[in-house]
Image (tube, rainbow, N blue to C red; front, side, top):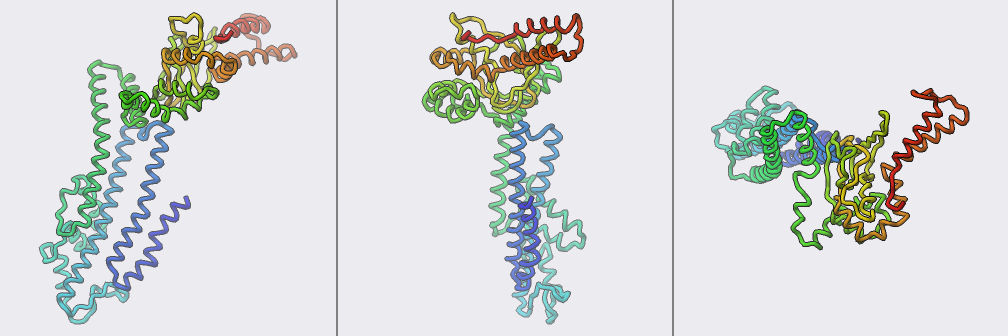
Amino acid sequence: MNLNLKHLLILQIVIWIVVPKLLREEQIKWITRTFLLSFLFQFLPKIYHSIYLMKKLQKVTGYVFGSIWWRFNLNAIAYLIASHVAGACWYVLATERLVSCLQQQCAISRKCNLNLYCNNSQAFGNTDGVNYSSINSKCLDVDGPFNYGIYNPVLLVFSSNSLAVRILYPVFWGLLNLSSFGNELEPTYEFNLEIPCNVLKKVFLHTVMANKKKMQLKYRDMEWWMKRRQLPNPLRDRVRNFQRHSWSAMEGQDEMELIQHLPDGLRRDIKRFLCIDLVKKVPLFHMLDDLILDNICDRVKPLIYSAGEKIIREGDPVQRMVFIVRGRVNRRQGLSKGFIANSVVEPGGFFGDELLSWCLRIPAANWLPVSLATYTCIDSAEGYAIDAHQLRYVVDHFRYKFASESLKKTARYYSCNWRTWGAVVIQLAWRRRRLRNGTNLPILQNGDPEDRLRQYAAFFLSIRPHDHLE
């Protein structure tokens, strides 16, 4: 806040202190340069701050534009601001060009004493017998001897007494030239503004439009396919949400496809650089050595989920073990008699740990274990996953480490299944304690509290997870 306030005060200080001094000294070029530098010095930090906020918003929500109308409105506002900036710079430099014409015509007359500092309500020059109206007409005439080049339209602004024209025409000029890539410009031999501006605009727009064009082509192909297959609108909305989130997170690039054809050593080092910090965030892997972590990093793949998507349903075969890096996932487990256990998997958590018992089972089972709960994304989530056959490969080669007692305790502590079972056991023990102390419990249906507690105990103990070491 203080930094933004300092930036806002810079232009006012320049106008109140520096510009009047330069105006008294007739330093017109320095005045225009000072205006441009102070304006850009204020504007560039705002651009950086806006881009920083958009990137931060993208990391938190997974996308920048919530809907197509938000995207249109923000792009339109940014386009108008860019037009205002381009038009303001053009207007300042056009003013400098007009002063150059006045100085040139005054030098030709040899009797002109040009004074641009009007401290006594003076016009251009002094009353020394020189026809200043002739000088003004030559400099403000479109067909005059002075060639303004790309600043030629500014003569309409200087000749007009309308305040609306002076304010809106520079914005219109910036909008026109940004839309036409500067094709409407008619330059002279002075290319100091035209060439760098056009090059920067074309490079910037080409870079932005190239990525957007690629995104639009993928969207169009997907829309054509969904229309051809006659997918219902809810499914189409889910596909569009996933595409938008995937593009904002990965910018349309498939990391694994880019590096899959590289040599094994180079690919392994790249994946270690990309994944090692994220894999080490998983508490289950804290006690593993670097060799095992390298093998895990070489076999994991990134996953992206949009909000509301079901990752796996209760009863489905567990095909991969997923480690959540960003976002939250809701775990919903149906118990019995309509009872449901809910919990949240935070970043750093994991699920699919049924595969650990499956991998360490002797003899090995040919069927995949079933999921004990349904996992649904609360918001946009990102993570890494290792498939069942890849996890079995790692566990088989490093069985001595995965079969340790310390790793079993760590897996139990962070396992969603064990945490749910532990919470149920604690609640059951608390109810039993209250009953023993004589605390009144609400009478449950189909029997007295003691009978219902026995039924709950038998049921809750039946969902106790089973370890590979038991």
